[in-house]
Every structure is written in structure tokens, then in C-alpha cells.
Image (tube, rainbow, N blue to C red; front, side, top):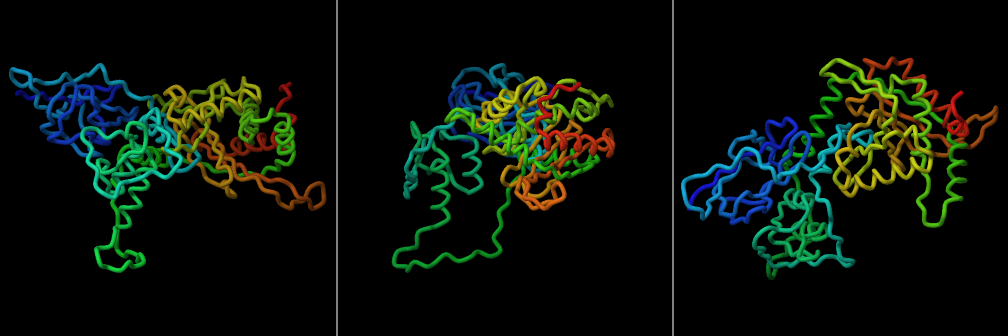
Amino acid sequence: MSQFVFKMPDLGEGTVDAEIVMWRTKPGDVVEEDQVIVEVMTDKAAVEVPAPVSGRVVSITGEPGDKVAVGSPLIIFETASSGGAETAPATVATIAPVPAPAPADPTSPPAAAATAAAAAAAERTFAPATASAPVVSTAPVSHAGRVMTSPANRRRAREAGIDLHTISGSGPGGRIVTGDVVAATGQAARPAPSAGASAKPPTALSGETTEIKVIGVRRVIAERMSEAKRTIPHFAYVEEVDVTELESLRVHLNSKQARGEPGLTYLPLVIMALTRALESFPQCNVLYDSARGVLVRHRAVHVGIAAQTPDGLKVPVVRNAQALSLGELAAAIRQVSDRARTNKATRDELTGSTITVTSLGKLGGIASTPVINSPEVAIIGLNKAVDRPVVHNGAVAVRRIMNLSSSFDHRFVDGYDAAAMIQALKELLEHPATIFIPKV
């Protein structure tokens, strides 16, 4: 027997350390070569690290949330090979970082950067749950070897204090799906009464707390949110927009759609109008390179779409939105949003936005204060559209009203210019035919 010391590999792109997200093994376990042993995260990507050799785990370094420097011992194996102690090379070529999302505002649907790493941490495929409720055995189940499930389900189980080895998976090949974990969580919360004891209604627990360590994606969200609010002086501006004519156009266009095709929402119409407004306000389509102290102004409009996903908010990017027709824009928004929600988005699809648009949909409320998706300098938020009585052409009428909530980096966008840009966007939306008329 000999010991094999495996060091934290160099994950590329200038990383000097990586955070332990989840151990897939523990001291005493026997693992096979290429079996995933730990999930780690850098500021750029999340990586599943495989075992370089087969053997028994002697010791591991760090707990979830701890950072381990590149080149430091990560895990020690006891192998059957002859000879003295061996040390794994600092770089492991077989480890491929999963693409991570671009930095975005993590506070709310306005823009979610951190969500960027969530796409990397999630598995690429998910086994569908069975139609009926999953069956979880009341007797402990003992699984030998690695438990098959997604990182999200591992997190749910860990937060609920459930050992995945005790859950019987209802997915293909015994894979544990989300329904299995939910069912197990419900059973863990309702312990069976002892023999002879009468059933009692559940009583409220007082003084009970749960500590949740801030690690992985949530840590990145917290760091980037703090950085954005600490370094960017936000100027917020909210404007009321009469979208009655825009709604009429949307309904008309949807009536022409073939049966089964997805309906048109406000989002592509607003983005198309935004690309037109930015022609007159190029200082809002800018990235700030703080390291060089340079504003990088873009002619092309690469729009970040804040999308809610099972793993949190992500910001997929529609590139060259100014060159797309309304139908192409709507299709592109659906495509990148769906790929983000299903964890299929590539790094390129989650980076490089020059301005972000966020829509809270039916939860839009009256107004919001979106946080800028650094290094951008502007973000536009769509609030809920509702029918309201307003004065229109000298008389009270029912009109469809929607508020636009925006934030600008006040270092580089003056308040006057910010307000003027939103007013230009308002005019386009209130007279939607002008969105499609080429600028003279």
C-alpha cells in the first residue's frame, strides 16, 4: 500500500484558489478512478473534480465553504500501487470547468450575476419524475457507493438534514429525483408516534433556528451584490407608460400566430424600442473597465435578460439585438432563457451583455429599484401592466399603464440623460408604430 496526495488542480483563467462546495466522498470510502469526489467553485466556474486514481480515502482538506489554494493537498488516497508516497500533479488536464454566467445583479429579478455560477453547478440533464408521487421507504435504505442525484437535490437534502443514502430513488437506475427528496423531507418532519402513544396534532416549535452556511452560488451573489452597491452610485428613475396601443398591437400580432406557437410578450417589443432609443443615448450602452479606468462604448446592443431559473436568477444574453426583427428577437429571448433554465447555456450565452432588461411579469408591482449588472451602467425593469382610469385627451378613460423602473451609474450617466433616455423609450412604446420606422 502507498499514499497518493492529490493537490487542488489549476482550474485555469488565473484562479489561485477554489471553494469547496460539496464533498462526494469521505475518509474511509473506496473510490474508483474518474469518480467525482468533490465539487468546487471559483469566481468563474464550478467544477466536478474526479478522482485521479482508485483507492481508499485517507483524509480530505476543507469543509463546504472553505477555500483551498491551488497546489495545496486536497485529498489523500491509499492505493494498492507499490513504491513510496506519490503526489498528484498540480494541474489535472481532464478537469473541464463548466461555463459560468456573466456577473449580474444578484438582489432580485433586476439582474442576477451570481446566478452565473448556478448554471455551472447544476447538472446538464435531469431525470423526469414519475407521474405518481415518489415512494420513499419508511425503513432506512443503505446505498453502497455514489448516490445518483443532482447538486440541487444534494443541497436540499443537506439543508433538511437528510442522508441521501437513506432515500430510495424513483428515477431511472435508482436516481434520486426532486420528488424523492421532497417526500423524504416531509417524512423527516413528521416522525411516527411511539407504540401505544395517541396521535397528537403538530404543535408550533419555539426557539428553533437553522444555520445555513453561505457558500457556493449564494456566496457569489452576496459578494457581487455588495460590490455593486458599494462601488456604483445608483440613480433610480421610474416613469409611467401608457401601453394601451402597445397591448393592442401585441394582441393583434398574437392573433396572427399559428396555433401552438408561443405568444408575443411585452419583452421583445420593449427591447426593440430600447435599441432604437439607445441610438440617441450611446452613453447608456457602455461597460466600465474599472481596472483601466476606461468606458467601453458599444455600437451593438447585447441585451442581458434576467431570467428566473430553478437555481436562481441568471442573465443570458441576446446579442446584436438591434439587428433582429421582432420575430427573431422574440425567438432569441425564448431560446437563451430556456437554455438558462435547463442549465444548457454556454459561457458565451451568459456573458457579454451591454445593458440588462428585467421583467417581473405578473409579480411586477408598482415600481422597483433594480441593481446595475456591473460592469454595465444601466438596467431597465418592466413592472406589471394594469388597466387604470387616467385622463386621456381631456377625459377620464381606462388605459393600460405600466411603469418602467430604471437604474443608472451616476458616475457616467447624468440624471438628465438618464431621464431623457427613458422618456425617449416611453414615447416609442406609447406610439409603437414608430418602433418600426427607420430613423431619418
